[in-house]
Length: 181
Image (cartoon, rainbow, N blue to C red):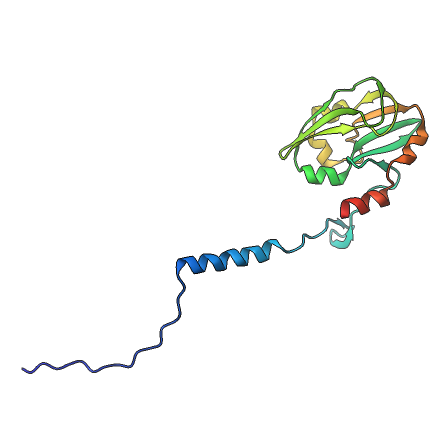
């Protein structure tokens, strides 16, 4: 029986393939594009639960330090706490230590330390005065600061030597502009 040769079929054009080295370059380029996208600003939820386009504003009844502590004059005392911006940056707060529990304190002096899963930061007073109260509830339960930084989670109360020193701190508009930049 004679041997027959197979009939030649026309070849299909092959798809261009890339080497593993070239494909990893593409992935790197693609991932860079994704990371260069601007972050969305924090927004305030309305009563309906929908998110608006407006960033959440800090309360305007307080003054702010550039280190993110708020100061509110209330019944002759200055109540000091940590801003929502700082709380959001720290994420989960795990520890609060107030080292200045009573006695004189000066503007710019550290009165405590706050620790989160990310970092540890000092807490500073923005005025001269006398520490008269410490929020033991916030010390015992630091997660309260994440939940209600402008309310129940105040840190210390100070009897001011000169309440006019509050005017040297930032207004909420200036503080919000600084933190938005």
